[in-house]
Length: 46
Image (tube, rainbow, N blue to C red; front, top):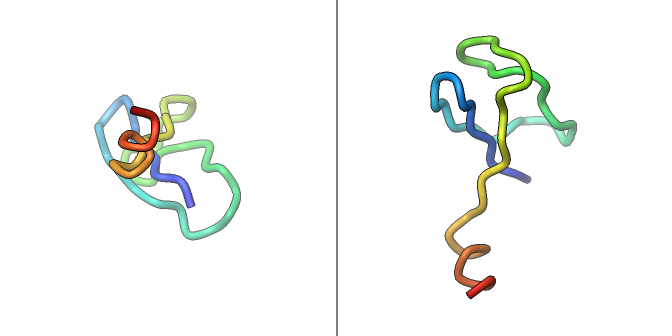
């Protein structure tokens, strides 16, 4: 599962379903979600 962060309110979450969310569950802003990399993924890239 992917970790998401809202660029509007900086709320971080993991969705409960496999579908990609379209809006922030905290502030309900649409189109401001970005996928965050885990620390393990960042280390693998280096």
